[in-house]
Amino acid sequence: MFNQYSFKQKFKALLVILCLLSITAYKRSFSQLIGSYKEYKALIEKTQEINAKTSGLNKLYNDVAKLDLLIGKSGKEKEIIQQEIIDFLAKNHSEIAIHSIQPIHFFKDEHLSIITNSIVLSGNTNQLLNTIYNFENNFQSSKLVSLQFFTEQKNDKEEKLYLKLIFQNYEGI
Image (tube, rainbow, N blue to C red; front, side):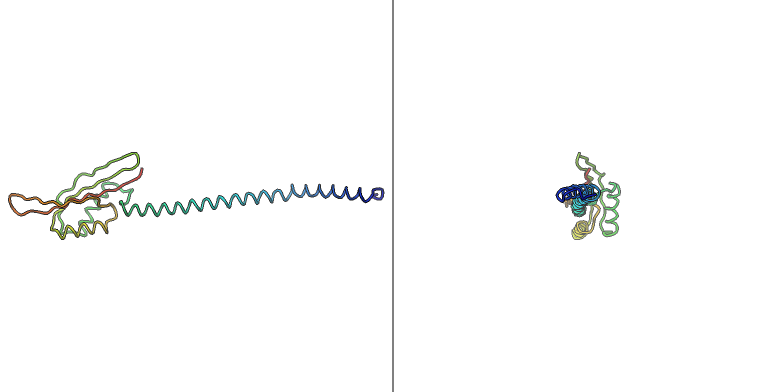
């Protein structure tokens, strides 16, 4: 049957069949393999991008935790913060008298809100200094931003030492 064709014609036919089989194999197997490989590479890039963003997110969480330590914890009700200040005083400094508590001041801007608590204490110098030190180092709910010592003299009697403390909390909006 193939005797009538020359070797040159047989070789050309074999090359054509080889090309057809190569094209068929490419379309059936290799193109899908190449597409899968490209998709795999794209997924690897996306995974690396997500991991980079996640590490950035972890850094952001750490930064927020550091800011919470610097400016006081956010997300608490303003009345609860004031109660925590009073509770801290009652538990740790029972010898200090609370002279007055100012109403809570709340300021809201387009970027942040600020909650300010003000309290006036009375006691002797060492007690008040110890109270300031403990608020700075051990009180986590709010940060002490200002303090002022002053004295008052009533009816020509002895002077009484007072300490005005101002605490603030910042919250991003």
